[in-house]
Length: 143
Image 1 (cartoon, one colour):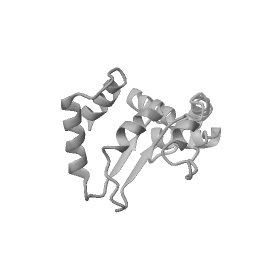
Image 2 (cartoon, helix red, strand yellow):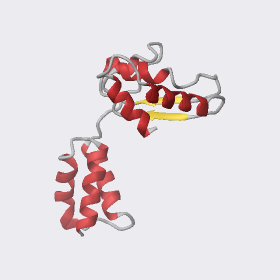
Image 3 (tube, one colour):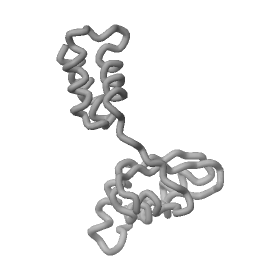
Image 4 (spheres, one colour):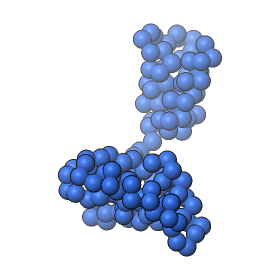
């Protein structure tokens, strides 16, 4: 799949697909044909990627799913305009703090003297769960 992902990125630069790339796409199609699969396409910035990928993923009406994440509303609705995209919201300060505290202190309580600075750190992550988790990981390693 990684090789195909790289090839999809290259296909923007070329007018036509090369033989090796087409062979890779055919292998994926044959491997998935008749099977249930879950494909996650994370942080998609162009609807062209969906056009390239949909032709190599068989639609056997067997419950297979493709999850596409993007920040762009037009890309989110492109694969199926009849299905409303699920829009994620940012976490509030309390949710960010709960996530940070849970990751850093796992099975123990946060010391009271660290609570204010911990809440400031959580707020500085801008409501992004990934940022909170990454900062928590750094804090755990530092202690």
